[in-house]
Length: 230
Image (cartoon, rainbow, N blue to C red; front, side, top):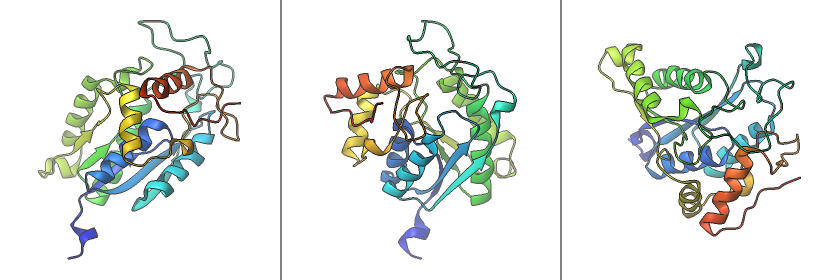
């Protein structure tokens, strides 16, 4: 048996952003054979899909699959509806911003779970974060624990005794800590994009909440921000 076949398989959600790139690098460093999963879900920041391709090319994966959805058909988010502006004046404390996409991580993890079952993989990696984030309910540890329970109740693999595990290696880290870790793992963050309102060329607005968190993270990490701002 060669070295590749000895590796455990993992499905890794890769959006093209800073966090998911770091998560993929961590999964690879832990010895997993990584199957990357990205979503074209009707997002206005479609440039992140090109970034996801760059990230997977940079880090190397066994396979990179893109799934097509259209969450814009249900609406309810500035990321999927052009008629809702992406806020540029910060996020109000104790509120869920309009950039929240209804049930997005629930949908994404469900599809990742299905692919993991097909692949015979028991591990799914997602780059959610509960420290430097925008207050999304589907980034909380309680949600991840609950989904892991669902994964093991609702699948043939789970019923037959294979235990699925949802890995969230960034969940308790600050953005600066994430950036330092990824830099140590050799990530070129210039190939990623975090902006909610990036143009088709991948130039970031520099004003949305995601850009603000990214910029602050590089500053706190003491590292230059390689983001291309317009």
